[in-house]
Length: 165
Image 1 (cartoon, rainbow, N blue to C red):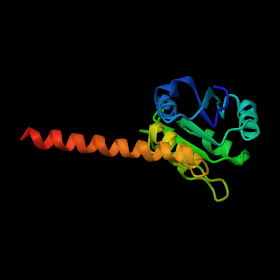
Image 2 (image 1 turned 180 degrees about the vertical axis):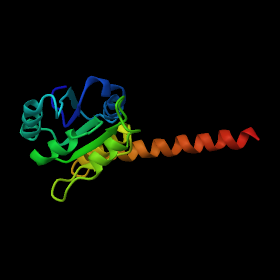
Image 3 (image 1 turned 30 degrees about the vertical axis):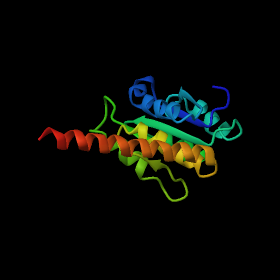
Image 4 (image 1 turned 45 degrees about the horizontal axis):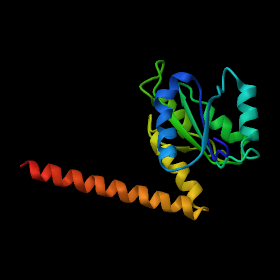
């Protein structure tokens, strides 16, 4: 895409099965994004360059998904002025996902990372849209419309359930 506002990064390509949900909801909401693999442990120089250059490249929010030790969101947050949303990923070497959750959640004062639920990349995409929408009324209206559509889906399912008896 030509003018990405959100960067979606992940520690390895195996995280794509989770992180694609962020991309899908951003597409649905009309938010341009870029997506790549940036490992805090295996490509630390690439991670630092990505995080330090993100703002000057026009990004407004970074969504960082990571499993296991999950240092990626916090390390990125330590060197960028942008908001970072961490997505804990339950990986093959994970301790039931708790290692990732706690690694992202327990950031020290001064280096915040917004943290969504385990494997909840869709919520990260929604939160990124809300952050952008705080200063962009067009994006904010898309979020209002999205939430209204969710309300109607629930009401339709309520009618379906109640009509079953």
